[in-house]
Length: 462
Ligand SMILES: *Cc1c(COP(=O)(O)O)cnc(C)c1O
Image (cartoon, rainbow, N blue to C red):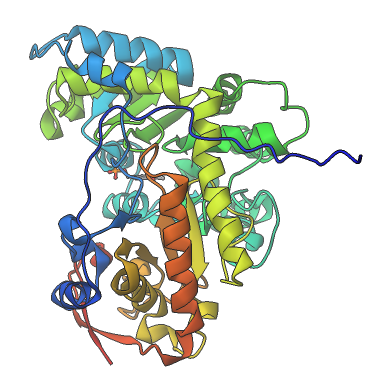
């Protein structure tokens, strides 16, 4: 008898100890909730959401080890023992000697931008991130996108769409001079490009370029473990290295980094500035007192810092990061079976629906991605997020919308929160919206705030 090949599945590397019930809603209830929220998924009440894929920011499920750590929070105003434990782990995992805690990532971005940038400077980066760019601009810099062209093409399957294009860097240096470029702002995987990683080879090349031109290199290390995982899986020479080793090597090429702990670190709040540069550290340590609190707590409780320190130990575990990226991959493969257009290769933290293709009958100024996110919510209570023209905001010079090449809906996976059954339900809902896509009408913006408008803007159906 011929032997039948048995499929080898893998599953979540944990069992569930505490559950949080979720409310089930009807379609007409969701229709009403969507209208009240101005068709902006940021303005929905989380109570009215069934599966919440708005963001993976601060939505992580902590482990019993982290919760146990919360009980030994040392809530001293100064010199909490949790701070020193966290500092030890910053040195251990990121390899940076100096460290300042902040209450979240954008507080770190604010201070790094203020310290490093003079008005009139230029900051090159591998595509922008909303809060990163806004702080660089508020500090007086002009942001310049130097990501490889492939990143702007959702159909391109290049493995390293987070890479920096050194030709674009050289052009910028020629145009404005290296003195006007205090640092290169590098992130990985690149959220706005679809969670796409950079390669170690590219990082080394960028490092050499920066060294030659005396430009500093700073790392938005918020999702660095996902990038390290991709390097392990896809880049030659890294298969046998651990995620921890790869992370450490990545960080070794940077002068400093900031982190939103609400991602990789498996906690609900927190941020980090870490650097090799003593002078920058001393400025940050002084500035944090003005904006966040004393440099040994930076806007956090002692228990938060303990959970961060323990989360760091878990973030580099292979099973954890494999589950993380593996869930996203599973979802992407299921959607592809229904022909739903997604950004490829499948990224590290999220699936990005290509709304330009999905709703190809809508012009970009009718907010196709915003429309699609609203439709998916109304269909099944799954909450996604727009990453397109609304997120891109307006050009500060002309006041017109920025028209980004990518018009995406992001389905972001909270870490350790949902099971494969949730993913199946979500995939089926999106497939059914796709089946009736031609009947879907666009939106018009009826309220628009000045900064980071996508958080609070409101729409009406056309
Ligand atoms: C979330 C995030 C930030 C901002 O961090 P917050 O903690 O939300 O303030 C910055 N950069 C990247 C890449 C992020 O994902």
